[in-house]
Length: 247
Ligand code: NAI
Image (cartoon, rainbow, N blue to C red; front, top):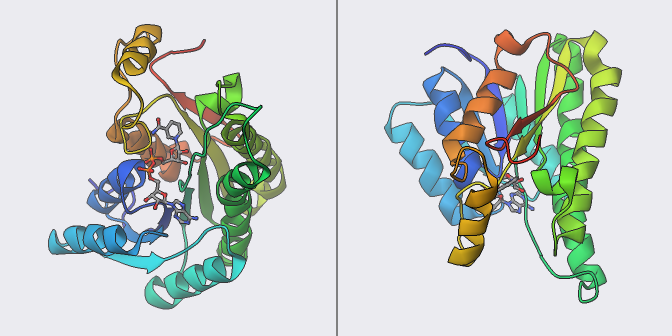
């Protein structure tokens, strides 16, 4: 129950889905959590729900693609809770289209949020982590980024980039007491997958040796492990949580 006792965590995209499951899990393990999300309505509701349950949780409206917004988020977190111990770069979007039809805008939007957003957030928390010689940075990739996925040129590029940045930062920051890792979810039941037709979901399930899609808690548990000191010698790793869809 106390694996993150007193730790301060920023979870981007924390208003719903995997990010919200992670926020609840981190709170239950003793962390103080800032939900950093673009969606104000959902973010306020989610932070309120966790606060009502007696947890320390705040919402800060953030656009991870906008550096000023990210700087304000980090300033808010340090002013409110005194530090940032854990950053979970979980916010992500899709704008799917086949290569032939994908517009440059669709390509760029996904890169701006999923890849540049991770760069902004990680760079912005670095001074406070470096100053204290402690930090955990966890970024969310995807099986689409590792194996490719039809209709996801932009998304796959952003998620593959996350693995490259993670390994680079693990090398740069390990000596400073900062662990940098990625989680690679398989298809997970959230709003991101709710518009996928039923027969495609059945096909996806058929490819997973576990015979089911992931749920947000499956991914939140991986974030928790990497955020905890049980993972203090895990660095530069891309942890697949995908039911064994690819091996
Ligand atoms: P979701 O769509 O339920 O939640 C994403 C959250 O990110 C939303 O609350 C949204 O408001 C927020 N967000 C979007 N753009 C933002 C921005 N510019 N700034 C701040 N917040 C922003 O999605 P889900 O499924 O919970 O995804 C979480 C992460 O897991 C994403 O990075 C996604 O790419 C990744 N992932 C999801 C998979 C799935 O099958 N659901 C599979 C593999 C990876």
